[in-house]
Image 1 (cartoon, helix red, strand yellow):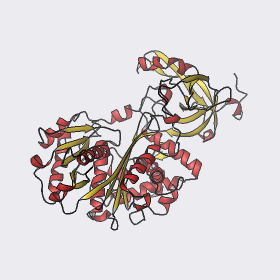
Image 2 (image 1 turned 120 degrees about the vertical axis):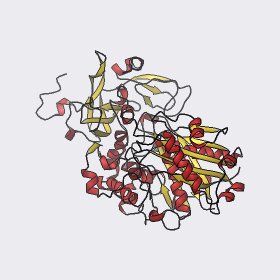
Image 3 (image 1 turned 30 degrees about the horizontal axis):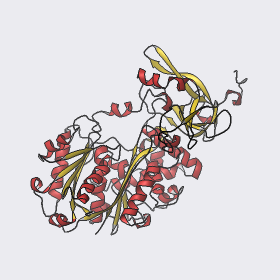
Image 4 (image 1 turned 180 degrees about the vertical axis):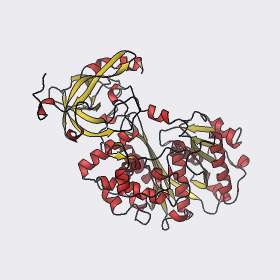
Length: 146
Length: 386
């Protein structure tokens, strides 16, 4: 565990804030940098944009073979999170899936971002976003509860 | 600029070499090369410089001095090249560049890797703690992402992906240096243990030690070493962001497209001119996507390409006659150098049981991965009978 690495992206890890390149419109998440990782603008100008909590799975895998201290099966997806105002490009993010059965997951599945404990830094929990199939959409579930 | 020619190649059997040190691997590949040069070589007098490819996972061979020590090539400029999984092919490219520029008349390219000394390191490099990447995302996951999306977008079947592995394992049984020499069926692949859905164990290359060396000479010197030199006709190297546009290409690797187009242009050929290819098949899906990236078929047609046998030994574009990384193994620093050596053998008609029919143009391709699922580096070399 790297404390400094965690602290460097703390604000973005705990809020769904992306950074839109004013040259090409690509949305960086979680990093805000000084050059654009899509169009190569240098220096680039970024505008802070709020990201929606619901996005769509673009592709995924289910990891089975991992170090012993990681729970398996471990689904991981590339998720496009649109901007809250519905304008501009979505942010494309890597995320772990949680609270979802493997049968529910496919390309095109909608998922919600949920703030969860990722792992511990010593005794302190480190939190960020995981993704899950919306609760209200699940059969037999009483609703989203939020 | 001068032309550059491959005039010799030597490789060791890829496999598990716990009993051999890094020095042993380098020595063996080097001695095999000296033995391979048709007209012989006086290495101290003839070799002007060396380029050395390794990631140095084992932590034993970090600098050019490792090659000087292992070969006895003292007082010569030796440069280590590291460029992800394209390390070996980029070392070859750099040696060729020096020969073309006239900075060296004869250059040694040598690549080596001991992958089995520290497998925990490989898994550990899966970045357990980066929040934004997802915990423990491994190489099979990065490439598996392409497989899931390719199946969804192009109706590629799981069986077509598995056929890449079936083909390469069959080829590997005929190639003496391959690490894992067994045949398998589509069912064997799809029913082998799941590593990262949709990829199973037989979709993944083994963890392998290996070393390989090739000799590059300019046009004036080449025929001193052999009557049958092979011309390095073109190359391309492309570097991408670790997450270009958030990994925009979910079904392909843009770096491979850029690198191959540059290599084709330099060599003055088109994809259809390639008679034999050794490409990066770290996972079965990687080769399937690479058919498309290299222009051997249209985008989305990779599954049909392998299913129709077009990449088989007797197909119109044989791919990975050596068994590829899937069968032969992937000792990173040696991988690209070995692919160059294999194409050299093919173009000279010396590939034994995996020889394809009278090839004139051969292609070698590596893709390297970065911190995210994009192929962040790609190197392509085109070799040609003069």
